[in-house]
Amino acid sequence: MGQEQQAISAGGSTLPAETVEAIIATAHRLADAARIETLRLFRSPELSPLNKAATGFDPVTEADRASERAMRAILGAERPDDAILGEEYGPSPGTSGLTWVLDPIDGTRAFMAGAPSWGVLIGVTDGQGPIYGIVDQPHLGERFEGGFGRALLTGRQDSTPLGARRGVALAQATLMSTYPEVGSPDEHKAFQRVATQARLVRYGLDCYAYALLAAGHVDLVIEAGLQSYDVVAPIAVVQAAGGVVTDWNGGPAHQGGRIIAAGSPELHAEALELLQAQLSAD
Image (cartoon, rainbow, N blue to C red; front, side, top):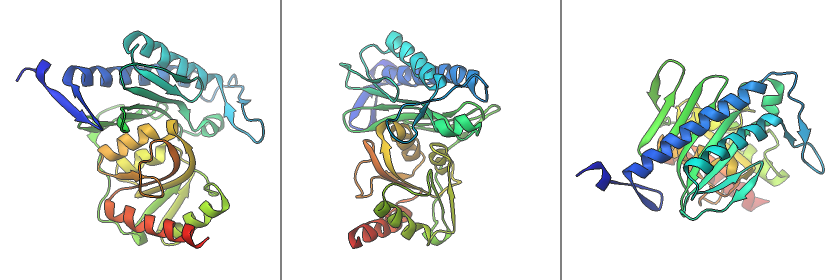
């Protein structure tokens, strides 16, 4: 069968092989463009963050905005029929049934602090959920990708397959979350019920925690209060690496909210049962 006749299934879609190749190539061009824009201002005295929240502190920088503008420009030229959802510039409609979900800097607070745990998130969804994603860390030169049969970490020197760690019970697990508070007081109590039984708990890596899970270094990531642009790309990467990602009810997680990602179905079930038991008790 010639390549022009082949098709690849992903999510709820079956796409021609040439379409899949075009999506992957475009996604990498987006990541390359975002690297240029983010590294231009990373650890720069010209960063000048602004607060976009009416109350509290929700920072945005010119690096966030320039990164998303650069990615949108490429999509406008190469994928004009696809929809876009970006953190900084919102939704743009499309007709193809595919949506590019962009977080130009996931971890802006880390970016402001000069910490290399932030990343650029590029996800693609069909009508059912994520079908492909990239978690890119420009400063470290690490690019994690997953979907369409690919699960790969590409560094500055070489590429290695991704694979979530299996055979780990909660008592031996490494658990990560971005904030110790983990959402509302009830959500925090549910998280703590899991955390007290894990071997190691660490905080603060934003999207990089999901990348480390896909690479087999972290076993669980549990968070709450997320948006779709925070999770679509990490979900695609983790699932491609053999992991499991759901909401705290065990359902689809790509709309955001409460997220639990695990390296194996068994660990996911063990942690999810504790989350649900605590929420039911409150």
